[in-house]
Image 1 (cartoon, rainbow, N blue to C red):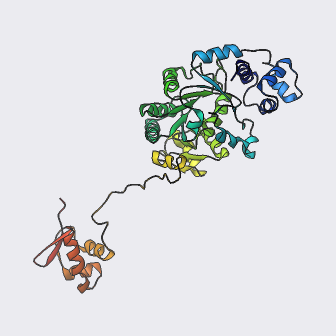
Image 2 (cartoon, rainbow, N blue to C red):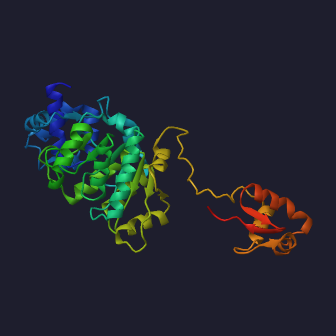
Image 3 (tube, rainbow, N blue to C red):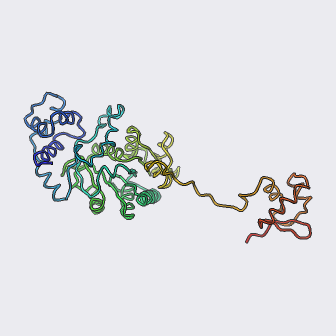
Length: 376
C-alpha cells in the first residue's frame, strides 16, 4: 500500500462515524484517494454522505494516526488486503442484517498483533458476557477458553472486565490465539485496568478496532463493535448476561448474521444468568464444555465426544438378571423359590440368572440360600 493510499484510508476512517454505507459506496466506485479528495472539497452529490462527513472533513489527522500506528507496530487493513476476512464480512449482505442501522461491514480496521485476521476468523469462537461476572461465570469462561486454545480455536471477545477478561487470560495462558475487538482507538486501553492485558493480546494475538487512534469508547460504539465480534466468529457463546446486556446484543448480531448462538445455563436464582436463560428459551444452543463449541466451528466431522457416564456392574445385566438381582434383600438371604416369587419369574428360570450373577461377583450362596455380595 503506497503512502498516498494509506493516508487516504486513514482519513476516510475518521471522516465519518462507522459504519457508513454511503462512504463505502463512494470508495468502491472512485477508489480511496479520489473519494478522500472529493470529501475534503465537499464535492459530493450524495446528500446523506455530505451530511455525515461535514463535521470532520476539514480535520485531516491521517498522518498523525499513521504515526501512532507505526509506533505500536500495527497495520491498516482494508478489503484489498490478503488478510481481510472476506467470507465473514459477506454475511453483512444478508437483507435482514443490512436493514439494521449498523448492519454493514467495516471500511477500515486498525490492527496490532502477529495474528492474521483471515486465518483467525476461519476457526474462531466468541466468548462474551457481563462485566459483573460471578465466580461461576469467570470459571466457566476460563475453562471454555482454555479448552478452545488447546484445540487451536481462536477466542474472540471485547477486552472488558468480567467474562471477556477471563476468556482472554485463559486463552493466553493456554498459549492460544485471542482477539480483542475494542470500541475505541487501539492506543486507548479501555478499561484502563486492562491495559496490561491488552498489551499481552497485542504481543501474541490481535487487537482490532474500526476507530482511528485517540478515539474514545462510547455506548454507541460498544454496540457497533459487537457486530464485528459476532462476524469474526463461527459461534458466539454467552456465558453470563443480565436482563439488559451487551453480550445479548452480540448474540443478536450472531443470530442475524447466521452464525451459531450459544449460551451457558446458570443458577435460576442468579441475576447474572437471566439473559442466558432468555437466549436458551429463544432457541440458543446449550454449551457446557469446549468440545461442544469446537463441533460448531471446527472442521467437518470434528464432533464432540459423548458425555461420559458413571459405569456400574449392573449396566451389562439382562432384564431377567436385573429382576432376579432386585429380588434379593439388602440384608439376609432367600432360597431360589423365594427369589422366584419376589421376582415374579418361574422357579425353573431363576437358577440360570443367579449363576450368572454369582460369576459376576454380584451375589453369593450358602446352604441353598442366596444373598447379595458384600461391597468391597
